[in-house]
Structures are given as C-alpha cells and as structure tokens.
Amino acid sequence: MVKITKRIESAIKRDRKVIFTTTREEFPFVVDHASGDFAYDIEGNRFIDFTSFISVYNFGDNANAEIRKAVKAQVDKLMHAAFLDYYAELPVQFAENLLTMMPRGFGRVFFSNSGTEANEDAIKLAKIFTKKQYLISFYGGFHGRSLGSLGLTATKTSQRERFGPFPNVVHSIYPYPYRCQPPDPEECSKVCIDHLERNVLGKECSPREVAAIFVEPVQGEGGYIVPPRSFIKELRRICSENDILLVSDEVQSGYMRTGKFLAMDNFGVTADIYTMAKAAGGGMPLGITVARSSLGDTPAGSHAGTFGGNLVSIAAANATIKYVKKNRGKLETMVKEKGRRIMKRLEKMKSQYEVIGDARGLGMMLAIELVKDKRSKTPGVKERSAVLQRCFQNGLVLLPCGASTIRIIPPLTMSVEHIDRGLDILEDAIKSESGHSK
Ligand SMILES: Cc1ncc(COP(=O)(O)O)c(C=O)c1O
Image 1 (cartoon, rainbow, N blue to C red):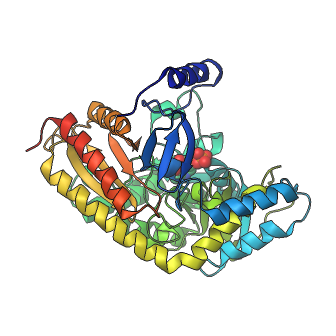
Image 2 (spheres, rainbow, N blue to C red):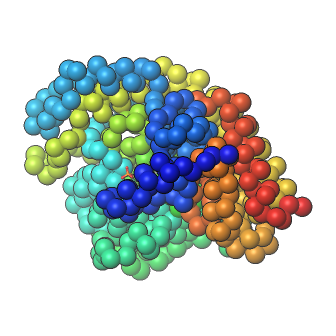
Image 3 (tube, protein in one colour):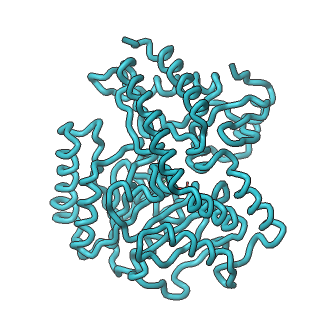
C-alpha cells in the first residue's frame, strides 16, 4: 500500500502555490524516476506503469539505453542548432529515416515541439496547399490546446470555454459504437457520414471552401473510441472527391501503439498529412508534420519556429525511429499478441462486473468504460475516480479519458508478467469499488 508521506504532501502543496493549475489527476503521484515497466515516486514507491507517461514511452519508461545514449552524446556536442535558419545534418537524416516508414509519396517534414504545434503546422499547410479556409473535425476529437488546434478540439467545453470563437472550424459526428443510435456500428458509421455530407458539407460549409478534415484514427482523449473501418474509408472518399486534405492526427495513436507504425494503416487508408508527437521524441519534446510530396512546399517566411529541429530532441527521435525500423516486425507481433491478451482479460472482466460497460481498443491502445449499470450506460464518473485511486494505492498508475473511461496503455515493451500483475490490481479495484459483481 502506497503511503502518502509529509514529503509528498509538501511537494504537492508547493506545486499548487507556484505552478498554474493544469489537468493533474486526483492521485498524489510525485514522480522521481522511471525505468522499463516501472515508475517510482520521491519516496521510492514503485508503480507498474499503464500510462507510458501519457503515451510517450512506447518503448519502455525513460526510453531505452540506445535512445538515452544518443541524447547524452548530442548534449555534449550541440543542443540547439537554429535549424530554421542554419542547416544541420541530423534533422535531415531523421526526416529521411522517418520517410522510409511513411506510405509512398510522402516527401516533406516540418518539425515543432509538441502535438498541438504539429496540428497548428498541419492547419497552415492545408491552407497554403488548398488556398481554402474552413476546417472540419469531430466531436470527441482532441487535437491540442493552442488556439488553432483548440478550434479543432471538441472533447470538453471546459477546454474551450473563454477562448472562442473559433470561426473557421465546423464539427461533425464521430461514430462511437458503444453509444451509437442505432447500436449497429456500420449503421452508425453511415449516419455520421450522411450527416457530414448532407448537413455539414451540404448546408453549412461548401466543400469548395474546406481545406482539410482532421481526424484521429482512434479517438484518444475523447475515450479511446475505434470507428468502423467504413467511416475512415468514407472520409477518404469525401476528401478525394472534393479536393479536401485528410489529416490524420497520430499524436497519441501513432508510433506502433496500435500495432502499425501509423494507426491509419489499420483502416487501409492513406491520409494527405500526418501529425505525430509524444512517442516520436522518445521522451524529448518533438512535433512532426509530414505531407505528401505532391502538395508542394511552403513559401519562404510563411511558417517557422525557433526550436523546431532541436538537436537533442532529434537525436532522441532518430534513435527511436532506428529502433522502430530495426524491430518493426517484432513490435507488430508483440503489440498484436499482448493487445489480444489484455483485451481477453478486459472482456472477461466486463462479463463479470456490472460497472464495466465496454472494453475496446486497437493493438495496445486499450480502455474500459465504466458505467453505473450496463442497461442505463450512465457514465460511472465517481466509480472511475475510485478505481483510479485504489489502483494507485496498490501500485498501478492509470489515466482517465472520455467521461468515464480508463486507458490501458503500458509501454509496448512491458513484460507479460507485469501486464498480468497490473491487470490483477485493476480487477481488484473494480471488484471492491463496483459492489455490483454478479
Ligand atoms: C490526438 C492528440 N492530438 C494532439 C495532442 C496535443 O499534444 P500536446 O499535448 O503535445 O500538445 C494530444 C495530446 O494528448 C493528442 O492526444
């Protein structure tokens, strides 16, 4: 049982005094170090990590030895190269390596420092390439918190209120199979596509004025929602028919998380622009925007940023992509097998406990949605909070998403033994907090 000591309490109290409030979770996790499958707090308490530090450490907590070695070497050589004004070899080498992992025909890369910036860059690229002004994204979608990408984000009003209006974005509906009306996923996909074509593009915003449709292939912050394949395929059709660019936001779902390098590949669709961050930097801040070569280049001066291509981030990213390239087949199999194993256990838990309404996901991007009861499907918000806290007390860190969902995103490299142990802790918490076991 994790003990909350005076030192932990004091660290949190001091934080609250001098740091602006962000989105901190309800449990008192004051992190100190991490390695492989585990994270440790300042008192040495050890936690199994089912969060990958918000989807960043896909290849083990605090990255692997090769990534750390590359970072250390670069720190001693040159950290900041003013890559936007000067030339440097390493960012180019990384871009070339990255492009070998992309579908054919992708030729240019823009570097920034975060997911939200990667989407800002995609917004500007889409406007430059199409000379159109509107953007479409989806309810439940999360694309970042800076003012351009916040316009695309429609996960919670608390994230948007005080900052609008966002006049150039129209939101459409994303299929949420667990809560679809009608409950059939294919029917639900049709309803969503019909709404997009008939209402959004037919009544509100002419396709002649739409630059891009931004979509997460699997909605992340919105609740780990996997749309039917037909939905993504139809988005591709609509974009191709109307000269609209399809932007795949892979900030959370990319870099092997779903078992493919690009989550979009699970749907047999190629987007026109991809955005990535989180795992791409192997723990260092990095945003990446990649576009089809046929879209062309940006006019000089239209976009830049001081730290894009920072050499320490790029050194980490280059070591990460080399690791992924070398182990791609192994990683694909591993994610498939471990993902199946976790899913089987989650499905079993769902059949046993009234409080689990849905178990879902793709590869190792998995989640359970908690409900008051299976019939009403009322979100189990308090129940989720209690489960997260109990797991924390018992040495497992987890993160929420959506209204009452818990994500299960261990590092892809986590051992089966630690995955099973984490799932045992989760099941114990569900059992004791639900009080509804059959
Ligand atoms: C899909 C997606 N896009 C964009 C972002 C924003 O990334 P960042 O927090 O690095 O700005 C996130 C963050 O969670 C995300 O999940």
